[in-house]
Amino acid sequence: MRYLNLGCGQRFHSDWENVDFLPGGSSVRTHDLRKGIPFPDLSFDVVYHSHVLEHFSKVEGMQLLRQCHRVLRVDGIVRVAVPDLEQIARLYLEALDKSLGGDRDWQERYDWMILEMYDQTVRDESGGGMLAYLSRDPIPQREFVASRMGGELRRLKAPKPKDTHQTPLGKGSRILNLASRKIARLALGRKGIQAHDLGAIRISGEVHRWMYDRFSLARALEEAGFSCPRKVGPTESGIPEWTKFNLDTEADGSVYKPDSLYMEAIRS
Image (cartoon, rainbow, N blue to C red):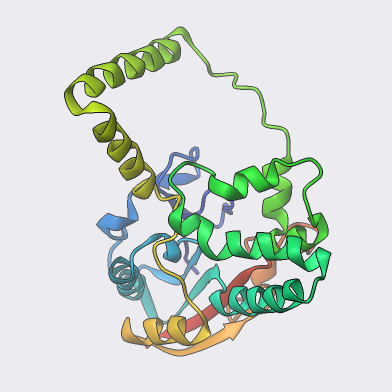
């Protein structure tokens, strides 16, 4: 069987073809998925992407799903994981009701749910309000946040390795960037620079440009040509030996991103 993992980031497996926007070593092919999927028709038995689709506009997301359909063989499986809008909305309403009732714990959880709902859609700087929240020591309602973020929280809080590849050339590049910004500021003015920086964030791939629930994702998959869309769990799949790849789960069996909606469909 041939497997394709799109937008893999740091979660990839040697049995798969792995593609990401940013370079990720010899195991990862660098490619901008807005330009399509760089493989021929009917190339794969499985296509998987996790927390990728929401970073495309609704129209671009449909184009990506149609590309997934194109490269899958007949009866192949597409597996999609996205933030679960329904779950976020239900938890937000629960947090709102209990916060209005004076529950102090839920008032702090309310702050987090507002961030889950909006921050990655409206932020105008890298990391946004979520990074500020997670930088607090201690993190408010840490167990609740961990139940939402799973392994992603551990990754964010882990100490970053020292950069062993820093060279004088790298320093020179940064100085050049600073010099370029000074020139741009003279040409564009302060508001022009602000517009440039905001635009850079909006197209960086960091923001969420659409959100999905189990109804809208199933409908999008059907519109892309897939059949039999079904919601599944992180360890549940029609993909043989799915859990051995540890893409939606960690090596210890815990769920990597518990806030996810997982859905699979068949290429008919």
